[in-house]
Length: 399
Image 1: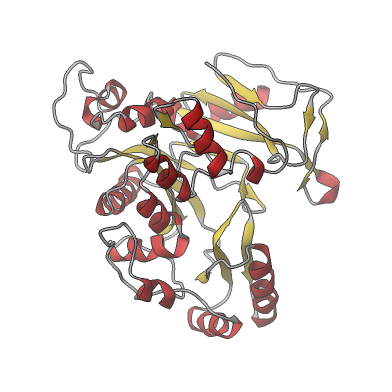
Image 2: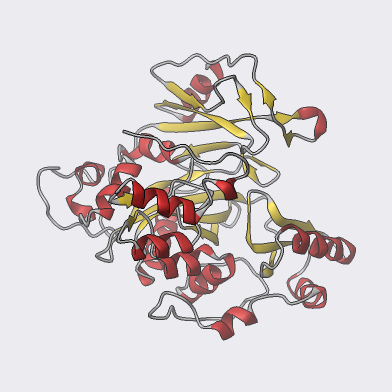
């Protein structure tokens, strides 16, 4: 192994700097680049530049990343694939993905709000409360709730200022909904496997705090239908690599509603690994090497099959072995409770954590125990497992 020093400062100088990443990859003579999460992992310019340099990108192709990574385009594709969607300003707009992986410009523009007046008209149609979103937003930026015309007007101005130049859309706010997601992995042969899913409903300022799985709020059969819808959506666009389809789930109606598809791995992937026994980053590498999903030993074990054989698996219809355990995760963040839990930086005096066979964690801080001002507020993650949700919760609490 080797590491390369990169400039400090904000991520545009280092981890989000596509030019620097590609230059480093060429200098180190690497065969592939693993994008991780955040930073440049959802920037289509990275797979394009790597392909030009003859280096494999362990993720979706640039056109598919652009289409599905955009919240507006992905919702159009989802409703075109008959995946249930929340009422929004793009209701009734359909499109098929083009040969280059994009969608036609006309339906995309039709689904973008151009001004406050258009947002107001849509809010009147679908009814308050609503949520304004910038399609290029994330991490809590570019999203505002509105319960009336006045809040909508100020929300429009804030969203436009936070994510400058981003297309904006509006959707109905699902009150009392749960945030459930499906972990997908696609190979280059058109196959997509669902590695169960996670419940990430506990959030603050639109950022996840706890993640757990398998989701217990939804019936197994209902969640399996949501998995199959997610798989078909990914298959329809030739998705390759790791991705996560996020749903809003209404327990009273048992309805799933498509939220977005994240075209990358997420930091809570160890929840999925603990449930399925599948090493997801290793699976990304195997898919990048051109190995078919049904030939990966971890996948075959997940389906209760002999890992030394290579019989076909119908990932839509064949049933995997449902886990007999529960996994729960908690994010450890540097936030100031006296300032509305805003992210903060500074020195960590002590990390008090007790690992056990049922709980493990990781922490990332500077050599002097500092969290610098350019870091994400999350600097640690702990994961606990047990035969039941209550056992996992207790293991997490004791750590």
